[in-house]
Length: 276
Image (cartoon, one colour):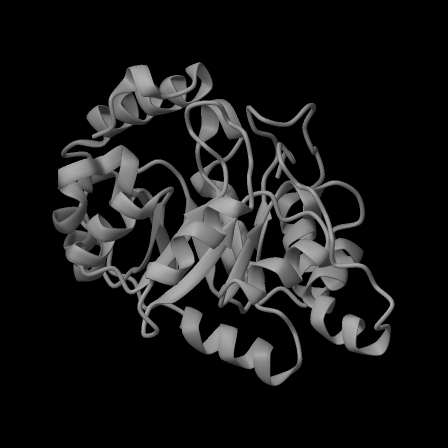
């Protein structure tokens, strides 16, 4: 597991809370068994429809954004799907992101696309909190436990998104057998966002691994930049939650087709420190 001294204070707080919840969950119930909606198939359907595969995130708040979104999360999720999202991500971390397992259950019941559980899992017991189609494992948080947690998640039927931040973590994820990898453009020490992070890591990812760009994607130009660097899909939170979620989602999923329609669009952008 990562050295806490190398993490931003907000991230250290999240990690401490995750460990506390893991301790509380130990022995609390039986292992879940999931029949997941296929994430790869959802991405393929989006591509076939001319949409960029986007995982739109229902995120009431976060330590890197101001304020909170009080709308009904089910209505937000339905708006994202109407806007063309291939899948959804739902926060279940309660203390820093305002999430809950109840929210995920309600959203998953209301939509027909795959739903990722976005949380900070550091112990196997946490996997049994709620059924979802995909779970997140953050390589930096789980360290040497990644292979065992990956196997435990798959035993329950989950698809697994393994998040990495650099080439070293990528190698650990590949060695553990990860087949869906997300590269987070947000540095966990300074919380600075740099799309160059994905561009640095992506060339090392094998072609048979599904690659997802995370954080810092705030415009169609950002979408095109990440896709050009090798992203099979994008995970987008704040840029969609800020305003009309259906319109925001539609703008991003149409980034490539709209570019074809209007070749004058400028692809140059600087998204360093974008709070997404």
